[in-house]
Length: 147
Image (cartoon, rainbow, N blue to C red; front, side, top):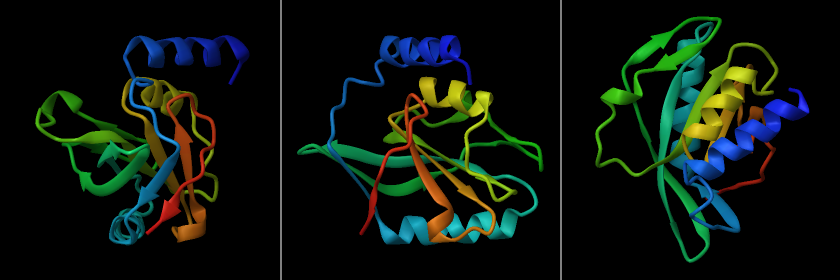
């Protein structure tokens, strides 16, 4: 990604309020990680995509569930119809799979990250815990813990 697009994505994220909720730690519940792995394996070679459900409390972003939104998937990408997402969900980001052994976000991923939450995950083939990479709203790698 070029420097101009990175700057634009950061500006979009700030404008849309993705930086309002401050946190210094991210914890993903183990059951959520296991579900992500299972769904990615079942979906292969197609991608899957879901929203991450959670909240920020005492400076900790805790991911405790997945929200599935209607959409379309293929081995080239996944698209969610976000206008169909219930308004009452506590979504804080997204997760999707890459059916190749590379979890680097595409330019489309980075655009989506900037507009849709605080934290994002990409799980790459072979769909194991170690192939899950976390990203912030700007597409920078961010560490997380599994609890």
